[in-house]
Image (cartoon, rainbow over all chains, first blue to last red; front, side, top):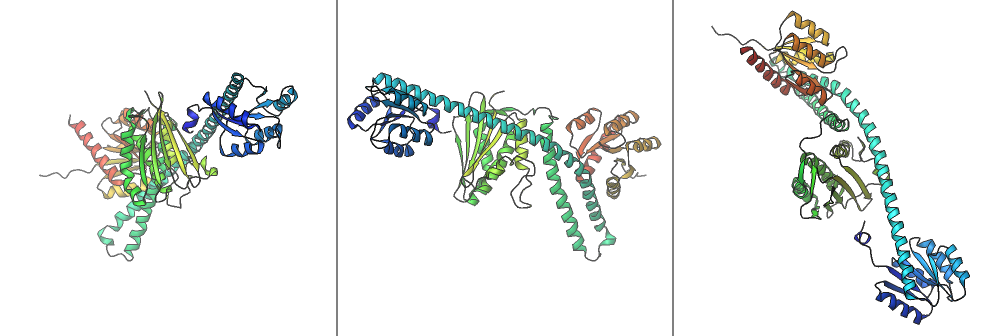
Length: 387
Length: 132
């Protein structure tokens, strides 16, 4: 969302009439009332202007040489559905106005025009635009929430299954681990000192132990998530008022070297002097570190990773944005799934974002992702601001 | 006359037989006097015949819930120390175990050195209890 959409902008109006004098006089009067006015002498010129400039309301004369007003109306409605059109019809040609409304005009006025009347119509048209924009945003928000719920349900189901698997795997893993250790213990005994191919045995045992450690890390991460999901653990007692700027800077210190090595700048941008969240600083730091590491890995030299901190009365937001390679649309809903990774084998377990999701969930927050391939990725964490 | 310190008497309880067997070997090499039990029932039977200092007890077994075994162990020999093993990381079960008097718990797979250290600490606690 850009700033322009947050603060209601002055209404931008495009005046289309073939009579230059009429246009300029009306234009000046509207401009004096605080409107931003563009002018065009005909339909073609109007359509051209609309392509480059966002205009909210078009005031369109019906009777013009060349492209007729009604034809221009149709094309405007077709190409710029968010723009409202007010028609100006000649005296005694109500028919044109009615046709126009059928074709999607907001309303029509009969020449000669009273300026107050026109201003009122423009303001009504502008209200309609604002309303439908708000409705659309709300619908989009609801849709996003719905999608997030679907993702969350799927993650819980996947997590429950994965944890069951992790649990069952820990037992055989323990046997492999102990057996490798046992063989090492035997190899170390004095009577086996001169055993042939001793280095081969040692190397193989080493590999077994390393592989067990790797598998163990994965099962441990899975178990960590499910603990939060099943609410087996009591709510973390370490909840406290956390100064987000300090926490963010601490996390940045830990990844700075890696970023500098790749030629990536990390910025902490805080929208308020001292944004705070009611959360567990240790676990939040775990999530931030994971997101920062991912962001650095996804970004090329000369790129940038930004941590944006915002708060409202009830919520604190931590946004981590990179200028990296981005995530293709088809992967975007899957990034929080356990074992989902696009890194090469051995490069990642596919557990990082899943664990992060679990932690944020446990902290009573939400985590979401937006991305544009080639431009970058944005993760947004929303947390309670107060107890 | 000097007395050689007698080895710590250890009871290993897990229905994963391969795990018990290899742990039996490794801990034996570390100087413990180890007895194996492949089920909760077997563990309790072994306890009737002789005394142990420390039990290493898996929480999830086919025949009996590890927590149940722990409860009975503590009734039979309150001084005997119990270290719980879990492949599950179930916090509720571990907390319940600690409330029932277990010494500590470890998550499988665990490092042998860590387990050995826990066993020694548990033994010390038992000695302190007996000295009182």
